[in-house]
Amino acid sequence: MKYLELKRINAPYEVEMRRAISDVMDNGWYLQGKAVAAFEQAYAAYIGTRFCVSCANGLDALTLILRAYIELGRLQKGDEVLVPANTYIASILAITECGLNPVLVEPSLQNCQMDDSLIEQAITPHTKALMLVHLYGQCAYTDRIASLCQKYNLLLIEDNAQAHGCNCQSSIVNFQSRKTGSLGHAAGHSFYPGKNLGALGDAGAVTTDDEQLATTIRAIANYGASRKYVHNYLGRNSRMDELQAAALSVKLRHLDAINRRRQQIAAIYINKVGNPLIRLPKMNNSVWHIFPVFTECRDELQQYLLKHGIETQIHYPIPPHKQRCYQEWNTMSLPISEQISREELSLPCNEAMTEEEALQVVEALNAFIP
Image (tube, rainbow, N blue to C red; front, side, top):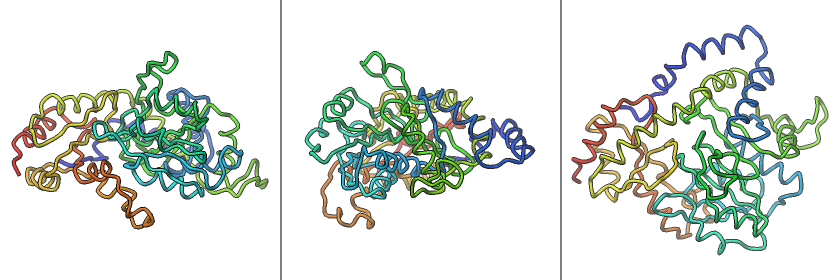
């Protein structure tokens, strides 16, 4: 059993996607055309924001948000951005690329999301933003985080690369059932092929209700140009092509069903795995982009499952503060993030799986003895 088979994932939509791609080919317009405009409009409506600006990938989406805030004077180089210590490195790369200073906040061991009880003590006069990462597909937003952002006038930026279609369950009335990607000032999205909403290559987007921010991001992503040959910013080339937009528009129509199926597979694991050596995630309201389990015997469990024909992955074996590219942090002690990186193992969990396959994984997990 493969961890994820993209051909199998996309097979149900193949006819629709081939037709959509054929329409692009027949039209003969491959960049900044009708397919991109249609996807941006549909995705903004789905997420629940006024604007969606497509771009080349998820890292660019986060970087463009920060760059735009610098251009608009909301951020300046040297400002601090709070970010989960256990996130995928792209969240942090976007911050440092813009000359901003990441402040790593430990996660909760229970759900692996940023521990909101540790945020206030990390805030300094230089803290200007908080980047919230909906890791593994679970909504990381809490009312406490919203309250702290309001109290300290922090920009709330969402990294929604792993949580397309996830609903927020907040006690704040106007936030109930809102989707991740619409909860803060702006959000970055990745449509890497393995995501719940995956393209046929790299693609990304920013969602926001802020028209000025959206306009600035669109210009920066298009060589810094407000119109052709008029360059107001030191821009870059970061665009989603028409073929990716066409494919994504097809899959967007099926995203809720995709997420429901992932939740059904996850429920089988949650209800039937009973090995005391394996700790299950305590995550509510997740679309299960990743289903992580945790064990002190992680490497042995991975090899055991592979011998039983079950492929797994590790997200992520080296935390950002131990990476060579951030060697100035290598002596930092972040024990919760380090424990997660030692113990995490990702099980197959996707919409193409059958119940029988999920039960095969359960049987192997329950029989595991190191």
